[in-house]
Length: 198
Image (tube, rainbow, N blue to C red; front, side, top):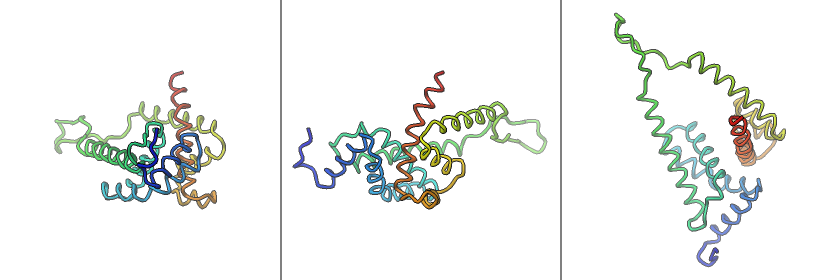
């Protein structure tokens, strides 16, 4: 039971908005996104020093938060909970980036007279086939979504448009574009899992 006297008006508003979002209210997702995306973006920019990584990590942070909203308990402010997810996500990203930098393909030809030749990290033919099959599977699953969600996925991931370009093309506020893309990905996840189990 929440004791309303111990919370600020801002916290109470967030708690109420989170409740609506859990109930599936897309406007609530948009409100949370618009309210906190700048602070999370600048945090990620500070951590990565790269605008593209910062934007991607911001969206991924919100995706994680929105997928786990039911785990949020109003012991802390929503902003604190979101900030913790962002920090953990940036740490994971930095760790993976570091591993990618130091990892290399160990197929070395020690008999090469020009010195050690390290083979490239391109995909093997088998991996290319798997990647192509996965892409086709995702395209099939996207067709099962409502047309507006399918269109958003197509514009963002197949046409590689920015959020701003999608916003202009569909004449939607950017917050709505981002929130609906999160929703589209949320709807795809169980479809993908279900297909993999078959």
